[in-house]
Length: 333
Image (cartoon, rainbow, N blue to C red; front, side, top):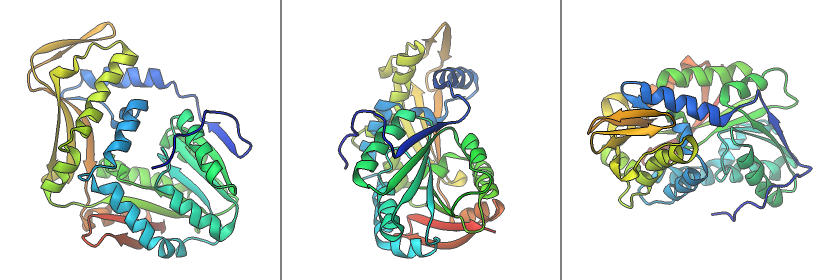
């Protein structure tokens, strides 16, 4: 665990580049209004990560039941030399959904030990997160230069097109790919492939299908941290959108559906009720849910199909001894 980021201030090795203006409040309000009007109700998982939600997720990653972060760190520690052997001698690093960049530190440190100066391009919709965590990285790594992209993924990928000064190592770590459907994963990876040069590489994390009991525990931990993380989405609506959710009237639900290769997370209404959100009243029946997240888990054939259909080719794969989680080095076909 790393110390809190220092107070936000300017830094000569940190620049932020904003894509087309993103009115995050307006986007949140619009997506909540649209999602709660659907049948079944749903809200995109990207809205979990306000300040409170981000702190709760960091707590989740330290739980015994949440194996993903722990295994990914082990795989990186054991395989990093072989992983970076597939990367050109000098690269820039581009990371999708950088967040705190906690797991990325090992990659950044190894690359700077090899090449000296390193350009790091974290992509996130939160300028404060990129700036604050970026300052922590800069204090740790004097040869690091950060060009943060404050953007959603489609805008960022568009900006990454064209000739690059050096080869790039794209990172999409953790299990974030699993928030996309398989079709959306093909589209996302295909869009990245379209802006990659022949020497560019893509290191992709993928959580593999396993015993449903393991997955159910990871997403519905005995300590209830994931439940608080899920319910915090309603608290965020209350704080930011004049919502009137009574949190005790909703419960966290999560389960693995093997036939769909995914964990689903929901918030279940415990009674018939009408909840004010701004000027609207949202009706809920007892037992009705808001679908808040899918987390797809991959079989080797499914992952291979997604990679191939996106126009990428596998160059190497690293896993824990049980094959629960994999890191995959990909290149352009």
